[in-house]
Length: 249
Image (cartoon, rainbow, N blue to C red):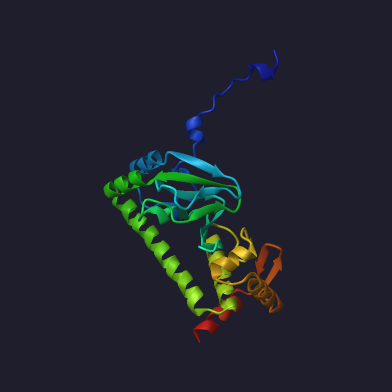
């Protein structure tokens, strides 16, 4: 009898294949630090399933009933609203370790569309269960409040971008913010691939496509960045920060 036929077949433990919150490498971004093993197990049990979203597909759309928030495991999303004249207004870009869906908390209806900019996967967190569990686990409640506060601060930051900064300052702020968020996830600070189009960047920053393209070209001419299609390499982080400091002077 061959060695192959006499080898013991070890069954696969499908339970161990599940990537639980307690084992996820994005845990510190999504969940509070300091939960006990028992509390982590309760959080794991609350997250009923994960969902894969293909590039270009909506995770949810404006007007959908709000039932859950979504922790992004992999991939990149944009949120947008459709204006009365039919134009798209991008309201944000979200990446792994961030949370989608909080736009629906106030009215029980989603107020924007969330679209995958690349193939992605999210953890589905039923909001009624999250509220109930957070009342029992104080660190979880504090973390939920921090996430909500972070969203408010981000909205204020966008309003500042649109209200007081020139085009080049807006783009510099956008690139530096993206770099900081990628670093928090273990990626390089100075080299990354843009998942969004320049038109989408323009919509988010309140700029025309031509203005965004001119700003990218100016940064490249000044030796601040190199651009190859959607691949960005920041050559002079201090120089980009100086563009912002000029706005404050």
